[in-house]
Length: 254
Image (tube, rainbow, N blue to C red; front, side, top):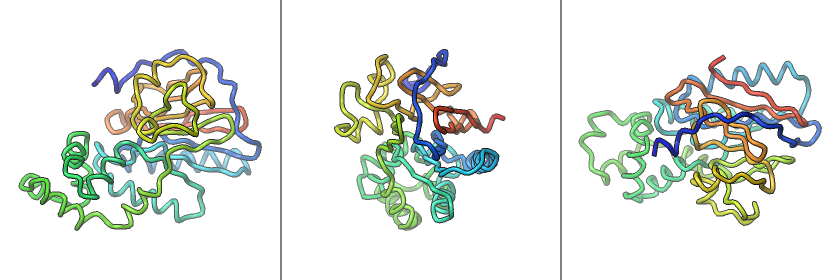
């Protein structure tokens, strides 16, 4: 499992991709409940955007806002706030949101799995105490979640997308299945795929920008870019900016 989650950095090759003129994209990797890092990174993005001059700017979150870190509920609140504001934001549904939504819908097997993959921290972030969590079986824990998680959060997470295409880039949470057209990708692959995608060395229909698999630094290859730098444990939340054929990195490690 550890070997699947963490991969070493490879030497960055040149990428021949661009987005349409007049647009500027900031793609943010997996936040995983780190509101502190998200607020810091959003501040850096806003400052960077202002320095670069006029453009149609957009932020794309690559999924997994929740779990593992201590402030998942608060991250969802912040995401809803910036969506309601003047900024232009889009959100991809990560595998952790998928399991959370299944658990909230009453799937107790999904709830058990959710707890195992970092959901305990999400549960506590919604005001469920350690004592309540410890003393509850899964039906009781589900009842507590239904009571404490705002319906607006569930509706917001259910609105997330699976695939966003901008110019020569396709933004997804986990990756894509090699040999399959983007229009024919299964959501299970877009949210969960790992080894088959990561070990694929040929091109895709678009250059894939993804999170899901942790690397120490941004992983740049000719056919894909990985932006999950393990924020919940490393303290480094990363974004990449895109404008024309230019790309740059912003992160909370300075």
